[in-house]
Length: 316
Image (cartoon, rainbow, N blue to C red; front, side, top):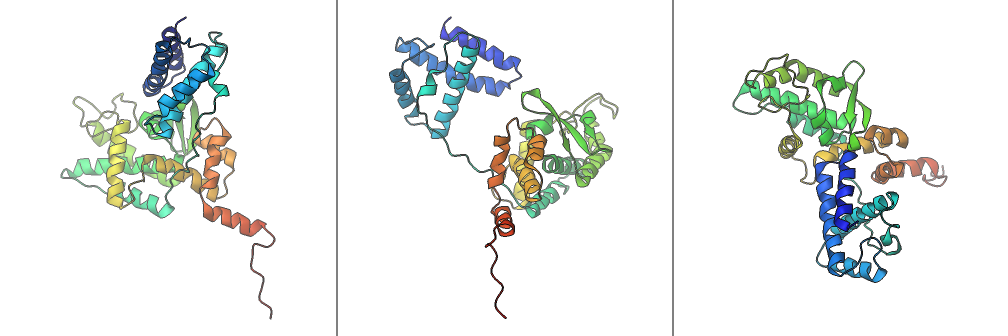
C-alpha cells in the first residue's frame, strides 16, 4: 500500500470517528507533505530510518514556530499509531526520535467582576431597531451566562438545541468533541437568562425569517438576526464586540469563559474530577492544568496546611 493510499484510509477513519472537517484538513496538511518528502528521497514510508527522520525534522523546523512543528509531528505520529493498529506499518518510527516539546501554557482567566462586566455589556440593547436590539441583547446575555455557567465551548453553544436545555433541572445536554454527549449544569442566573430569551428574544428573532412562525421547527437554541441558527463565527464576532464594550483586555476571548469556569470552580473547592466531568475532558491530566492557574488558591492552601506558614503571635 502506498503512503497516499494509507493516508486516504486514515482520513476516512478520522471522519468516521466524527472528527471535524477542520481536523481532517489539518491532519492531511501535516501528513501529506511528510509522505511526499519521504517519497522524494526514495524512502519507504512504513519504516524510515533515523537519519531520514532527523533530516525531515531539520527541514520542518526551518523557519517554523515550535508549536507548528509539534502539531505536525503529533499528526504524523497519530497516523503511524493508526497504521500499526491496522497492521499496515510495524510501528511508530518517531518513537525513537527526540522531538521538540512545548511547555504547557496556562489558560488565561478573568475574575468574577470581569465576567459580570461582560454579561452586562452583552445584555445591554444597542442599535437603531429597538425590537431587534432587545432580542439580540437577550440572546447575547444568555450566551455569555451559558458559556460561563456550564463551561461550554463555543462550538457546543452553537450546536445547542431548544430541547437540549432543561431549565427546571438546571441542565444542558451537550454534544462535545468526538460527538460525545454529556450533561453540564446551569445556575439560576443562566436559567433566568435563557428563560427570558426563550420567552421574548427567540420568538422575535424567529419572526424575522420569511415565512417562519413561533412554532417553526428550527431546532437551534440560539438564532441570528435573520432567524436561522447562529454559527461559531457569529458568536465569536458578538463576544468580541462585547469584550470591547466591557473594556476587557484583548487577550480575553470566548474560550476564556470556559477557562474561568474551571478555575473558579476549583477556587471554590470543587473536586478536580467533578470539573473534568463538567468540561468533558477524557483525561484528568488535561483538567489538571487548571490547578496551576490561581496563585491565590495555592497560597491559601499553603497557609492553611503548612505548620509554619502563619506568622507567630507577637509576645505579650
